[in-house]
Figure 1 (cartoon, rainbow, N blue to C red):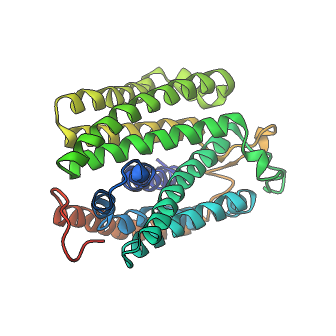
Figure 2: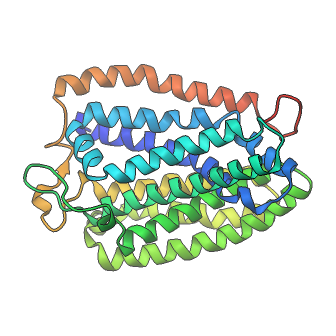
Length: 338
């Protein structure tokens, strides 16, 4: 691979890592209001408490890599999707504040208010991530100067909203499996029901999104049609999705969680294959698309960054792995809990 393609892959890996890790955080938030006891909500918060901030490092790292490797894409995306990204940032900040502030006071109304904020922030974040991905796949009106025209409401077309709903369903399923893996007793029994319902909801959304993509976005499947061996990635993603309910029925939550991670990785891989070599697809003028060649930094910059990434990414992986190892096992409340 050339440097441009290498950085396309590396940025994709960083964002896929974010989706797999922070995805279950957002899913736990989406499920937070489905239980109404204070202890169960505290357990859910403490299930993600040691890891949620580290998970978001992957988003920050991916954004930084995008800025350095493809600055024109970064500039165009953050101007064209400005309001969507601001809303996403507010939602992520608000849910983080809710996690930290929720248990600072014992008052019922105080805690319920932060519970609602945490849940709404999680759902809104998931929805906006899907909407942005939907617009990237559908295409946005990029002019010859590399600027996106249109309004925020123009981003909320049916395909983008469908992908947003699919993302919410996927993260909810991912979060339900994580809660089932990290809890026991009544809350674990509740999470089994949530998992079954979330799996059903995701499969319906996934099927609808697949049909809509095949019918309306031929450019997203062109590479797979030209290189049929790439359908193996789609097959692996489908097998990972199908394995989730199988492992849940057998009571193997950890394997179900790994299958859910594999499904997210496979779906992100299919999205990347559909987009490549474009990073922002222009519709209705494909010749104005920003791709890995016309939007990249200089070769020297990409080479220097590759050396930095070779040092930094393993540190991020090692940090993430160590945190999950330290906080492995079931969640139990104590005096240091949220």
